[in-house]
Amino acid sequence: MSYPLMIALGLLFSAVSLLVTHSTARTVLVVLSCVAFVIAVILTLVGTVGMPGAV
Image 1 (cartoon, rainbow, N blue to C red):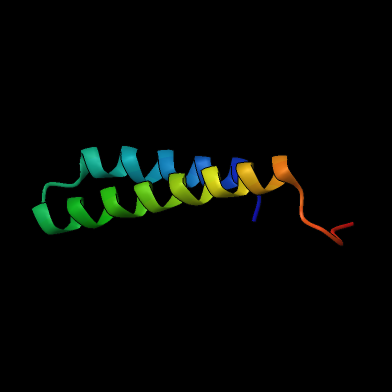
Image 2: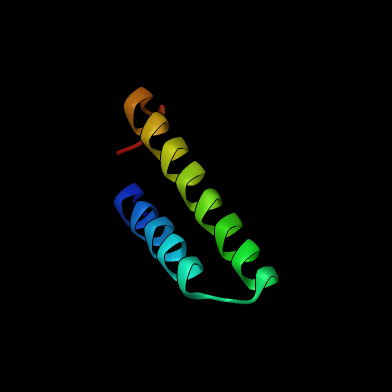
């Protein structure tokens, strides 16, 4: 997965969490969006630093 896709998923989960009225579902969607953003940041940093042996 690429980081633009993870950012898009994070934004999607954030937008859906605004529409959901159930508090537990909203919490789960916010957590998923945070996880997607963290993965996007990690992928960005790994892409910047580079991985040895990566083609």
